[in-house]
Amino acid sequence: MTRLELGLACGVAFGAVAVATMLPMRFPDKRAALAAAFVDRFAIGLVVVLAPLPLPAWLSGAAWGLLLSAPSAIVTRAWAPILGLGTLGGLVCGVIAAWIGAAP
Image 1 (tube, rainbow, N blue to C red):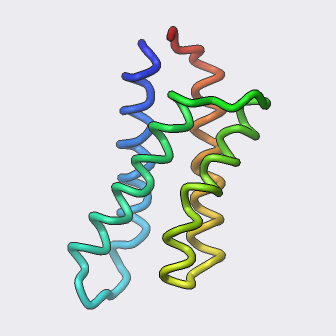
Image 2 (tube, rainbow, N blue to C red):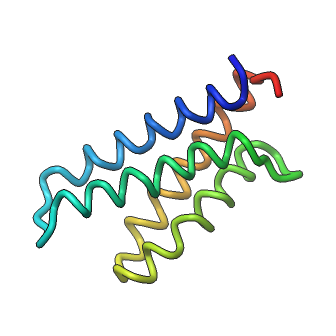
């Protein structure tokens, strides 16, 4: 499995988890909210795998997850759930990338 394939897989999986956690919630425009959440989390999964930082994989993933979640947290002011899930998801994607050891 290449890094791109793994990044796409992590992005799709993380995006699906984010959407699943939001399904029971109510939003003025639910379709837009779910699409934005999917794209936001997809980007985290992709970037964590394709652009690792010179840190341990789990820390690199957590850092990317936190950084890429910050704009959504600022706009929505839902700090804890957005930053928490983004950081945790980035950490998991980083661990998966290190564990699988996808070829460049």
